[in-house]
Length: 246
Image 1 (tube, rainbow, N blue to C red):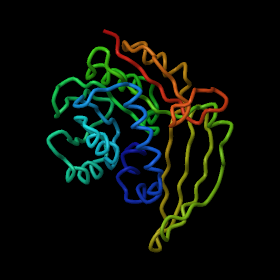
Image 2: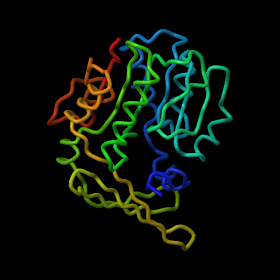
Image 3: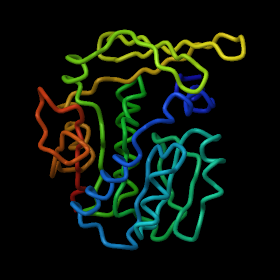
Image 4: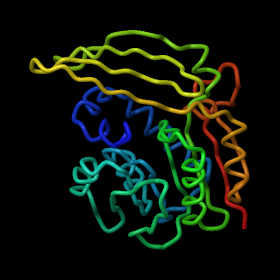
């Protein structure tokens, strides 16, 4: 199995990342939807939704939301939050999406917080763009919030320890060719565990080429969660705003 098929389904993944700044994330989503001027009651797909917090927030803002994720454990957890305008489904982002909220075509697809770049083969990356193009309305928006690969290379911290609850997570990071690899080692209840994350450091040009191949045009690129201007040398994020051509 691929690393993301096992790691994301463990409770330890959620323990390690439990202190993420959700206030920053919700502020980002509020700024993003306002910038895109997405009308209330529009349909938004939260692609790789994890535990569904952002899907729930979008729904509270007045949007019809479909949250999809490959993790069966996460989707099982999310089902308790479903309402008429909020649904969750297990889904591989490489496959075509068939919304279970109305209407059948989405006004926007959000892929947020580095939920891309997991695949070794370029064809798998292309399948993601193909599936999104298929499910979006003409003039609909695709938001791909990704790492700025140049900034990652410049700021890499190779080794550190972070304590979450009573677990010390020993983290090692390295860049191997075009991938950033994070080795995660820890001991819990006397048992040693090892997992890793592997994300392809797509360049801005590569992402733009994928988008163009599937009928998208770039309308904005932001460099942080406050929607600051993108700077190739200094920005921590590469937030691509694409629009599907009619």
